[in-house]
Length: 220
Image (cartoon, rainbow, N blue to C red; front, side, top):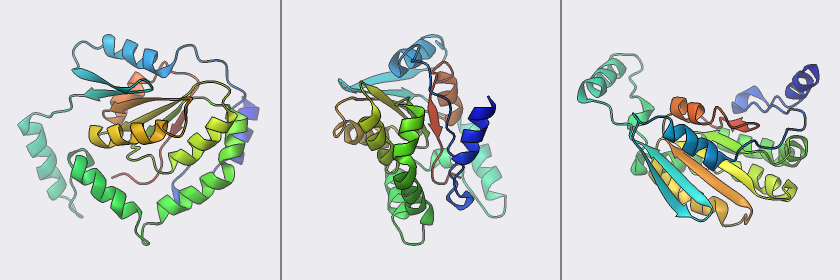
C-alpha cells in the first residue's frame, strides 16, 4: 500500500492543469470486461430507463433517461440565476449544439487546460502505460475525448490483447461520434460509452476493477 502511495505522489501533475494521475502496482486481470459489468448493473436497476445502442462490433452506448420534472428544472434555473455570478446547471447546457460550442472553446488560445494537459500526457503516457498496464480508461465528462487519445495510443502499444475505454458524458450525440473516432485507429480497442450523470456512471462502474478514472479539463 505504501508503495502505491509513493507512486501516486510521483505522478501528481501540475495543479494548474487540474489533472491528477495515480499509478498502482501491476493490476490483476479483469474479473469482467466493461460491457458485462455495465449491463449487469443496468439489469439490476429496473426502475431506471436505459437504452442500449450497439454502434459497431466494438462500440456500445448506454443512454440513461435523465429528464427532470418541470418543477425540478424550474427550481434549478431559479436557484442558478439568483446567485452571483449567475449560472445554470451544466447538464442543461450540453446537448449536441452545446457540446460543439464547448469543443470550439477548448481550441481557443485563452483556454489553456487542453493544451497543458496534452503536454503532460505526451510526456507521461508511455510511462503510465508501462506502470499500469492496459487497464480500462474511464473518463468523466469525456466530450470528444481529445486528450484521452494520447493515452489510448500508449495503451495500444502496451496492450497484447483487447483493451477498453469507457467515456462518460451527458450528451449521447458527442459519444456516438467519439466512439467511432476512438475505435478507428485502434483495432484492439473496445468502447463502452455511458450517456449519464457522473453519479450514475460511477455506480455502474463500481464493480469494474482495476480501472483508471480520468477527470480532465474543466467542468462547471
